[in-house]
Length: 299
Image (cartoon, rainbow, N blue to C red; front, side):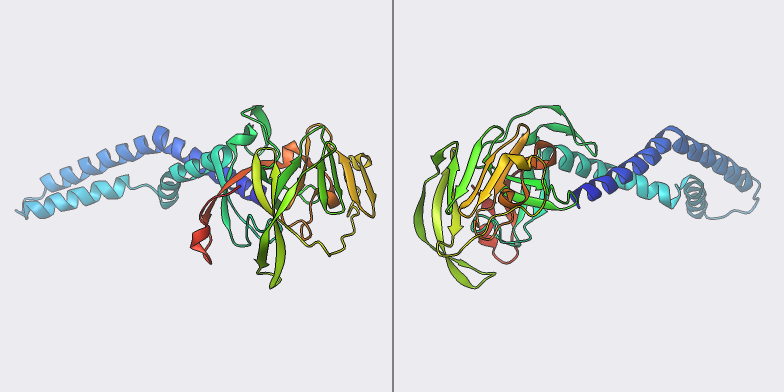
């Protein structure tokens, strides 16, 4: 969806940009000549008028004649007016930040359905718009980062999850415990969380991935069956059993999971996130119309 919007925005930018360039190089000069011709014609007609009219009215008519001759067509006016706005929005969302809306509860309790977030696109490197080709590397993702990416199963859909495994990592999720390169990622109980979508309380835990401490939800008594929902690329890197899944993350790809561990369709089911699918790193909630207190940064 965001890719389609970017394409539409780019097309509008090209169209309005061409009209804007045409206006400042050709059309304005043409309108100026027409205005000069209209002024000369009016002055000639006015000089031949032997009657003594109101000078103020004559001046008003002179200005009206010139304005009529120099007025740009409506499509030029709209294009010239909107071009700077479209250019600003295109540059901002292509290279700096892009807004997204959280559609589900898979990232509870960190992000709620209805949160409007900002995604830092600069953090993933400078890429050519539309082509999405990286030309300058400005940094790298770390474990614990929350990222927005194009869903590998259907790239027209945007997903948001947390980076759990980096390229080369060995990730295991067994009996509801997360292991990174053989080391268990510890989590400590931190009370209960009321999940509004299900109208139920769920156990909340504190977890630390890399330098990022965040909350997760776990339903200890809920049985979870792990199996792939499609034959994803590099599926041979993963082994499934009744206890869970173990994967070796390929180069140039990431393993991502939702914080709502028992209610998230993530890399455990559909595989790895290619670097080229990543839109950017989410970092700020700029609005939630149901709860204004949620505005701010998050881990």
